[in-house]
Length: 531
Image 1 (cartoon, rainbow, N blue to C red):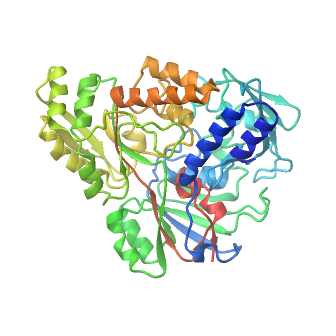
Image 2: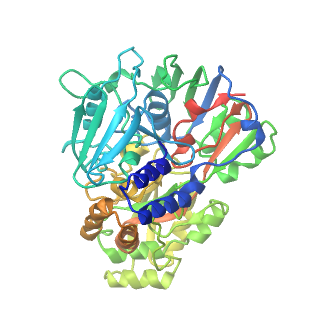
Image 3: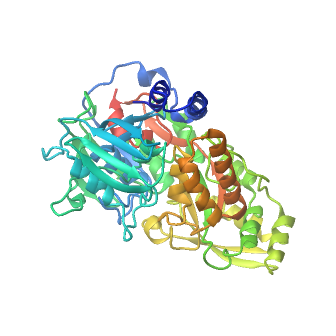
């Protein structure tokens, strides 16, 4: 069911008040703008056709990529393995609503503390094995436990137990109520794979329930898949096969697209758009998103363990200049929180951290410093324009006595060797559909992907409280306070919120393109076709 339908049904049953229903409906309207975009007639004028092969030029593969769903840090692996090879219990549709995927229904009880997901009948893995409740249980447990390093570990910390009720019902019992839980199980790490005898999942085999079957995987180079003829969704996928080809360099990727070597390219830099705009067979898609680019400081080590140093770093960045020169005005400047203005419960914290050399010097002085030397690790693999942004930041910050040494890291292995390991680095964040999902993934004290290593007691107290709060006004106040705390105390320097920019051959047909995650919410291979 759609999220609106879900809340409407709860309202009809008297499970929520009229006030809460109206609040939820308003929140859905507020996020509608990031759900999907509308496009030229050529993309939707014809009915989807079956057949054909597509080649996708992708920016962010690594030789360290694996089939382990606990990893998958970038869209190359995510769109291939989550969006094509596997399925989740739920799926984020192109319009941003939450719908069933392997689950045909999901219902809460006990104040949203218990959730029952009913599995679809007849779903099989690529080897013919039927999907079972045990597969779901073990797929989730793969990300749980003290030893887990999965990116989904923190969002599953609220799960107390995962039980079986008959042959088709999976029962999640949470530590406290969570109205957003159906969104959380759509996280791209939480792909359902086959359970092994004795526990765990058999992820090494590369067998899922998804729209495509894995034919070849060359880490850091390419992935090739062919159509699953027994897919549980009627008439999908449309393509017979596809290939992902890693082309990390943005200029080389653009050239490959313009010359027809690939039918699609992701992470199209604004400065590389002119040759595409001049080609009648190609188009540019700017998809509204929650994506944001940051320079993240490790708050557990000097000098970033001092909040005044962190504030000095924030005031020493001229976001307007970077937005104008690097992103050519396509985006919205950040204010040091990860919450986009299109999200429910967004509240812009004060003050806006605009470029202010005197304030930067003032905070350095409070930290007992007149100058500070820092290394900033960057790469084009971090985000498009990362190196150019770092060069401008270096010039801007020097006026405040902040000496930034730019460390150009290797593109390959950036997410394994730099992110979460180096104390100051460029990061590309997707955003999430809800504040709870976003904060639990990025800023919770125990989150494996908390790249700032930031642990604020009040923030984490509010994170748990807001998750279970049913009064929308109180919940809004809690999330508003959390955004202010991150802004004031956190280690995230948010440069800008930007669109997903893609290059598409007009040989590729598609409907509205989802923008919460990249590549049509990671489902482009399932949803798109050859015209």
